[in-house]
Amino acid sequence: MLDPKKLLDDLLGSKVPGTESTVHEKTDQAVQLAKDNPLAAGALVAVLLGTGAGRKLTGSAVKLGGLAAVAGLAYKAYQSYQNGGKPTPADVREPELLPAPEDTSFHPSQAPQGESEFALALVRAMIAAAKADGHVDDEERRKIAEKIAGSHIGPDAESFLLGELARPLDIEALVTAAHTDAQKIALYTAARLTIEPDTRAERGFLDMLAGRLKLPDALVDHIEATVSAAKVPGGVEQRAASA
Image (cartoon, rainbow, N blue to C red; front, side, top):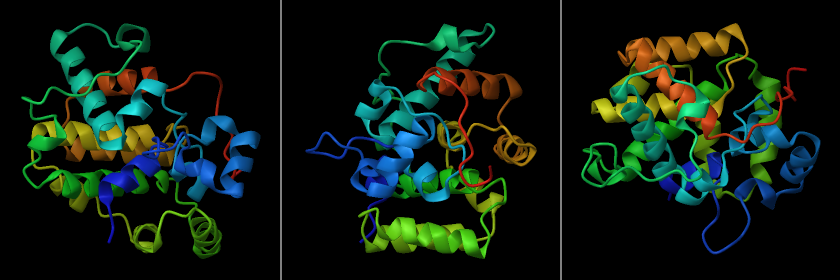
């Protein structure tokens, strides 16, 4: 049975409960990718798609777990937006990312559709973002299937990921999966975490998603700054598949 919350942890490179390893460290392919291109190895999305997926999250975000990390970043960005001022990574950088308060709509426990269902929506947003540059053709999907088979994430997760990779982009389905304003912010945050939008297609996807979610431009700027601050600095990712 698919566990959306665990899959979200896997996609963000979160710690596997009871171990000191992340999921991407459990395959030889992923370990080699980490050696060759450490900045792209912070998420299972990078392992599967070989794209310039977002830089590795800082330790504090990883420790929270995928769903809590996305919620915490979304809440942090919203608070920064509410406080006004010009968003920059330096303004929002903190030594530790805190979870969203339990009494706010940003906390996963407040999800009207349930935590697991919303975690699934975040996963779908991340996969959509990861393939936004359009490089995933039939041959690439075959290579991805081979990588998934060696990732030990389980048959249900494998089947789900392959199905999502083959599915045409449905921006409306992504948008309607967010039931509250807080979830709209979290959905965009998850998509932005997945990629560094260094192509026109990726930037276009994020702009379209923000527009359909009806997020104010200033709020999007704060999300951008907050996400950038939550990632390990250190250079520009190399695009393994498209280079």
